[in-house]
Length: 211
Image (tube, rainbow, N blue to C red; front, side, top):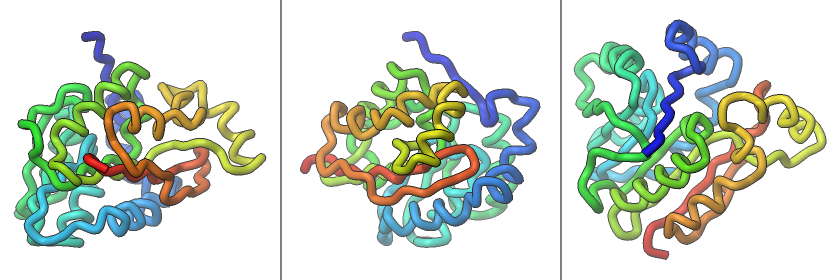
């Protein structure tokens, strides 16, 4: 399998700048709050934050529903170390692994959420990741994806002509993420929300296993 991993901000030496960039430039908390709301986590649910990075979203999920069993997974040990430091004594499980080969049994989670991760993956790994998410979700479990998405205005179309050259964002800006999700076996695939950021349009995609 040809898996190519791209760390936060593409280069490991930029990792310490990841949290400030998302907080002050991309209004991270605004769209992540919406993602947490859309996920509708209930008590005792098992929740996976896929590509958890430094743990900001993982902590938001746990605080929204303290009785949920929350796991954060990332392929970068450097950001996982930051996440563990940020979480202190919070009961969150932190695991190292890749989206295209999840280290969990079938039907483990009630929810899988992922934020600004999918655009890091090459096309084949995007497809593998959604198949893996489908596998580890329980029947009727839900997927909630926040990432770059298709433009909805002339402004965002203009922005994407430049941003599509960075990393593996072209699939996202071409509106292919919902298609990849449906190909993995999900039903009820829809764009629930969209936002405009300085780096381009952001979408929240929802889907359900077994619909």
